[in-house]
Image (cartoon, rainbow, N blue to C red; front, top):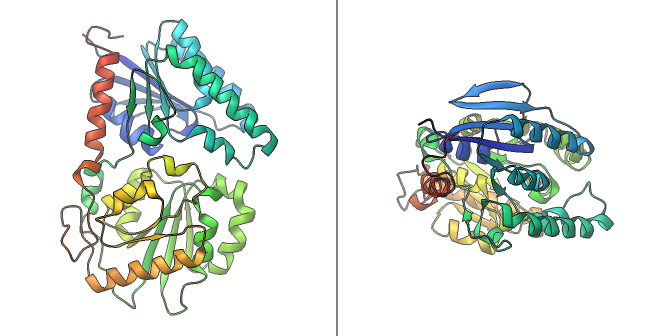
Length: 386
């Protein structure tokens, strides 16, 4: 019997989102037929056995057009299960459930807190938006086949018999090639720093740039920033004035797919995760933190209590107050000194006392993949193929 078909959908995320494509879709494609519908600059293509159908990027006020398009596609599709990644698709999920489709809601972040941090949403509307979300979830939850969350902290906000935490741990097979490929950092050489992620203010990009301006003149460094170019249009007034004096040291690369990010990680010594303490992100699973660890980078990371267990055995790590640029700058210098003294980077399978430390085996995507596939086996038992 042919395997069941799954439709993964997002009205806002890009088709090559690391959680959606490189973790979940590729894992599910080992067992099921997978079609992925998300924002993309093309109409349709195949990627490693996955049928990817693009959605045009639209302004927020045109987002309902995305919902209508996805609804039409879902009704035409033979997919028995609709796995969606945006809270605004909850009404569509309720409708599809009435049509006999299984549905899975994938929650990437603490949505009510995330709503509170939306700069584009007027502050007087945020309580209303949070309340509307809670009402929609309460109405939709009984009909959902499952809820998947990116962390245990996020899961605490939901009550569902099939509530599964699937964290953003890295697919180690993709990072294995970077292990040992990076040259050691020596004092006096160029320190290669990398930041990959969102450029919205809550991720600390302004503080990172301010921290760089506080680094000693004698430190030769380069900062590579990887993030969606569209964010520069939205947050450029905050970012550009801070980056222009550092133009010779800072490079914006725009959005890169995960394999390209890994190539950049191979060239870096130190990774930054400087999420601000008041952001919604601390409840989430810091995807880039795990990817930096998988690549064996030194770490400068926000000192967020929920995150400490992940880095407590990681040697080349500085926990900082991300709201204070001087703390980030001090953390960069601290980790640079550790790397310089060690004379090498520890790779994924080299966690000796002289190295950076390594990612624990339990933090690999392979374990999360098993949880995901076990959940799907309960939702789509054999004989439910479409």
